[in-house]
Length: 237
Image 1 (tube, rainbow, N blue to C red):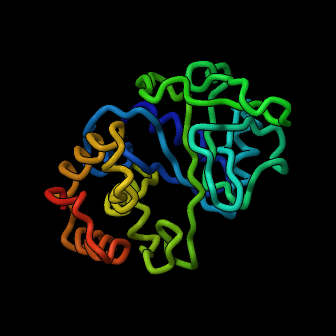
Image 2: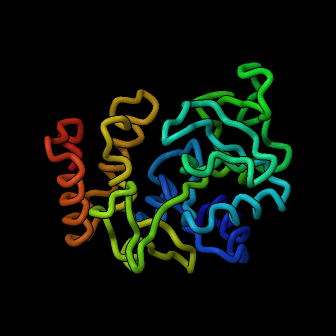
């Protein structure tokens, strides 16, 4: 089992709220091997627990940063340092970055933009992340569940029962690969010079080993999300 996964699980197992590994590391857990190198580390926490999650990380001495945004709009690549969980753009907050004590300069750099504001403002130090030897930063996504279902992409029609959406490997929870690929199916992922090769590798590694039921759910979901077609996924699904 990957060291970063074990370190994260050790941290969150006693947090008092549900979490799961997601993103590329979740695909590795399903495949039973490392598919590729990873430039970030992602987990999900349900929206009802997001304030608890932020306070949990701050209590551990981690820096927590949210993306600037208002009314659902996000200013890409600009982050503000959270000083108080009540001083956040919660309505637009779909996730935060948590950075281990002393590691902020490794990941983000302070900038002079928005001078005079109440927040410290940061941006990516490098879009090409270094590979982490020990867990230094975690992107925490705030996801939705409704009763017994996980709701992907904030779309009630794109639901997956929790027992199928959240899988376990050695008791460590992770997001099912078909749901991870659902998030990665967007045109934006295929138009980004940074994300495209990683997305292609993920699809090519995972599609052949999905169960028939999981593959059907993914393909039906992609049809639902992109009714006008999805040529950017040609050859991958």
